[in-house]
Length: 406
Image (cartoon, rainbow, N blue to C red; front, top):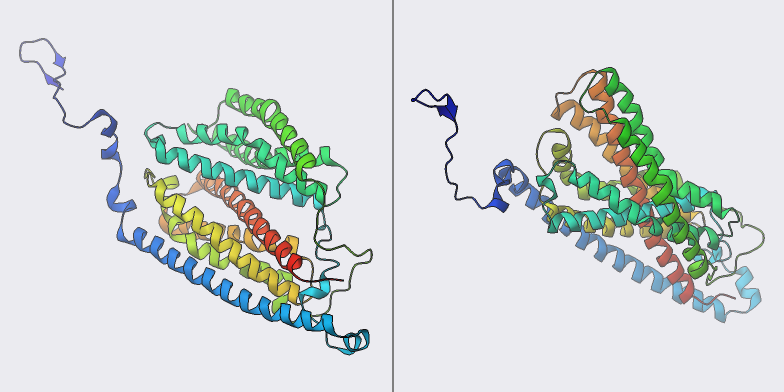
């Protein structure tokens, strides 16, 4: 652009570029930041952690379970007098209570269904982002996530409804409503609260009223009907309780145990390793959220998601084994919360990032940051909790299927 010497005013001079049209956005990316050696090293380090953890869990559990099976088979050969005088202990002793329905099954099944849906949404959106360059258009990632979330509502209804039916729940319509609106209510409630502050400050980040109405219509006319379809399918296809052990009529008293075997301690410690496997990636994701960097290395994100799933399942299986060995059968909520506690560490890390890595200040920026970080951390925690519970449930079913129980 320059001034024309012939008195014709300002004009534009076009220069031919050798950059292809599909590569025109590359100059806004920052390969030196996202493909730094630290990023590669963190992925490699996490993979080493996964290999070590899987090997350790497999070795410990296989050797320990083999000893348990041998001990229980010897007990089967004893007569009644020897068995009564013997010192019985371990996870076999709670076989009549291990498949007892969890406390608050309505909330629990809704959380599991929502976590399975969040995992499906994360997987699909990352795959789409790897195939299509969603970062080239503003808002395309958010639009894709909303569309995929609405389309995957049957996943929520299927897993939540089938679990609630297996636990003997009767109020399945209420469970369906809670499962359908749990995540949308959390997201929309936080967004609307922040929106009021944005309107007060006349900020450009304020969400238009028409967008709010459109999101509410999606919840009522798309998410709810699809969730109903998934709930009906889940109750009819996999809603029958097919546990390998019969549930006793009277709950078994839980014996006293050491303080570090209490469910509250297990829950607090269970999220450390999953957070350790993703916290480097959290730095890059936070930077793309709050520091004007464009995140485009979705292959890294897929690898981190796989690593997170494996580590979460391994940790919750070990925690549940120790809990059952202490003859405490309250494993459902413990497995969910020990995996979901990853969100607490992520949210604590967001405080560090806010005070040391950003220059935000004032009510609007602070509420905007911590509000959406709370939504992100909660959604991550629900997803991790559902993954941990599903893996642990398969493990518990497997070990009680293989042992002979009178």
